[in-house]
Amino acid sequence: MNLVEKFDADGFLESSWVLPPDAVEPLRAHVDVTPHGWVVDVWPVTSDVAAIVQRWVDEPIDVRSGAWFVSSAQAGA
Image 1: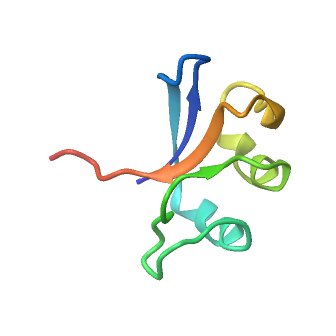
Image 2: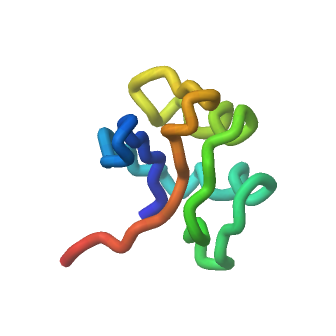
């Protein structure tokens, strides 16, 4: 699953939001995405990325904070 993650000042994960599959195509212009739709590595959220993912995040994204990232994670079974 692809995620938006917010970290606190100590670098601990504070919150995360799962991105739906339809978020992948718009993200391709800003982050590396595999042909299967997985975000490769961890990317800081820029203003362009925030404009894409904000509708799936239930709090305002402050790109200047350096606390916001997009990535992918494997769901546990």
